[in-house]
Length: 323
Image (tube, rainbow, N blue to C red; front, side):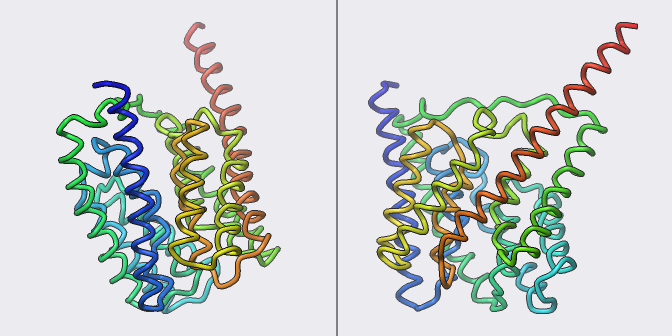
């Protein structure tokens, strides 16, 4: 496989992602329903088209069913409970349980279950849109994967390394830290009245950073995560401010965000979601990048503290074994 073919495969995947998201946005504008546009599609589409041999592309049925089930759960909770601690715990914990029970690799389905509560979505139309959007994405992904298997772009996909499993105590501490981060961001959101400090993609960012650091795609860029996310949030805000919600602002914000994460060579899929969330916000202002930066900064701080604790435990275990 030549480098030219590899670049061609990467470019085609990125372009197809932008075209697909613009198409979904156009449908939403045509039917006058912003929630026909599901922000997590940005991560799912880019992940599937850029990694045709990855876990999402290899499980198109799960890409459709997992977000559908979690979205149905989230809408059910939002219909019966107002935004608050009980509803948030039910949405997040319930969605994680659904993903784990289904043994699905599609963790971005968890934000699909939390989004209805954050944005007060109570209509089952939201679930129907997700079925349509992810179904179309799955069909496109299958077709694209067949084309990719013909030879173009194979070398663009890095081999997947299976990490060594964390010990039980470390795993428990990671989940406790994950829960603590969500609690802190919820508290900050409640105190400042900026609900999006606990924004739906933060669930993925926190999970990958804290619970699964061995396979985290942005592990080499933990310290830069707030900067990356604030920048893509700014691009999303600027796109909507200049062109309004719709395919043109999606093209500008998502396209620029993809170029940015490609330039810095970091596979931060939630950053792409952050760039298109303004499409479903009634009024986007400077508080949006601020909220995104605050939430991700909490995650990075927690990851730094967890690193210190885990290194100390590892050193202590080594000293005990040597004695």
